[in-house]
Amino acid sequence: MSTLKLDLESYKDLLKQYIETQNEQALYRAEQFSKHSIQQNITPDEIINVHIEALLELYPDIPSNIQSSLNFLLETMISYGLAYQEYQALREKQLELQSEISVAANMQQTLLSTTKPEMSELDVGAISTPAKQMNGDYYHFVKDQEGSLGIAVADVIGKGVPAALCMSMIKYSMDSFPDSRMEPSVILEGMNRVVERNVDPSMFVTMFYGLYDPDTHEFNYSSAGHEPGFYYSAKNDSFHDIEAEGLVLGVDRSVKYEQYTQHLDVGDMVVLLTDGVTECRTGDRFIERDEISDVIHQYKHLSAQEITEQVYRHFERLQDFQLRDDFTMIILRREV
Image 1 (tube, rainbow, N blue to C red):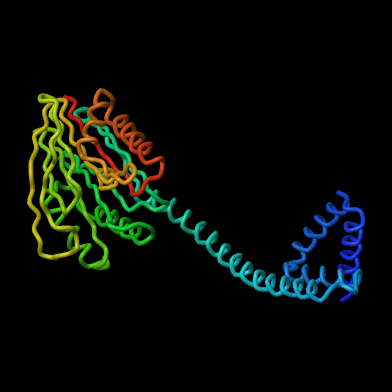
Image 2: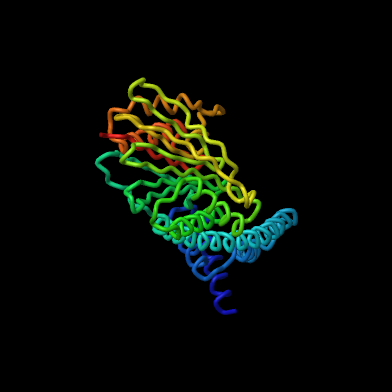
């Protein structure tokens, strides 16, 4: 009680000094009083209560309507104080959760990391940027014992932690496959069984798997409901959609995936992507696929990696630097 009495007397002196002089010194002391109150975890309603008591001691004959208004203010600040305490508690939990998600995002980045291959026959570029902290896209490169390059691109229909956990499972399932040559259709059928057993039915996973043979320069591929990519013909200087039918992973355990083949001549490109690229929006309008191929064509004189980076920057600017979905693009260009 002595501390409260001291605070009351101190506040009463401050209030009286300011009412009589209205100088800056009194305001400065009031500011110090506020800081001290915060350090002591004194709530706003307690300060209002001290203010009312000090005012009544200084001016006992305050009109009843003024006293009522002060009591009204006190009740208002009591409610405010309770709401503010709840807000602070929620904010602390939010900050704690954000910190945990940040750690998880860094772990995911390490877990999903893959090494971009160096091949004399093929120029490879890749970029994958999450719209939020956790990435629901995944890409992976793997060389088999015969020197062929396998490329996997996957997308979980969804965002956040569940999508990220699903992608981690996809990654480790891919790592469990043998190093010997496996056709894209076989890879997708194996992944389909994994997803069917382990992923919640409410989540959908699309996946594209391609296999480039440096001896024949053939690109074999299969798709599980994944966003169509592009094939660029250097001879005709034209782009075509890479169409491949296939059910998304995890829906039907017994589904079979058809395999397709595209021969690559020198200068030809294969562009693989996720729907975060094709569903970019400018205002209320979704971009057309032709706009993507036009941007790629604009930078085709650059290396494959530089093309992916320039395309990403273009559509990032188009969306005012606010990605609405995870953005992943891979470009393969035959060099010799």
